[in-house]
Length: 173
Image (cartoon, rainbow, N blue to C red):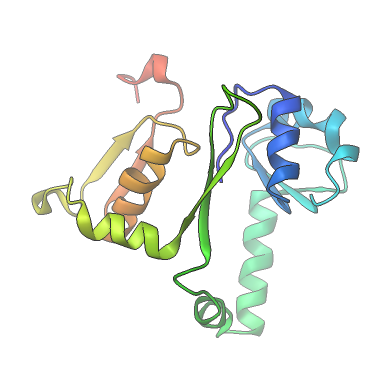
């Protein structure tokens, strides 16, 4: 589930509580500073993974530390990924996209694995001749179009993704 960085801390808190999120990935300290005052109002949140920068808080783990922990877990239990895959049903929720909330509180629209697979099989927006290429995208991961027609399509077709850091510098990227 993606959350727009432009949302207020109150909106972010609402979405995290409504979804009962356990882990939150944040880009940097600026995003952590936005959510830090709300931490006591997020009972389900167990860990925050920080991509860039350092934050001194027990709830925070940096991305490289998470990767090392994953590698250690896989070394001790090589079939861990296969077990996780086998535990997933096509009827399980794969993605939650929140509405803008213009007519009330935002609502989480749940997409199942089956829904995403059906979309991928019914949609062929990427020609075969660009397989293996790198494609640049600028929509945020909280946008349903980017997640389904972008991210999942690229994964299913073996296409490398490059994300624009800032829409105002798209030509530089």
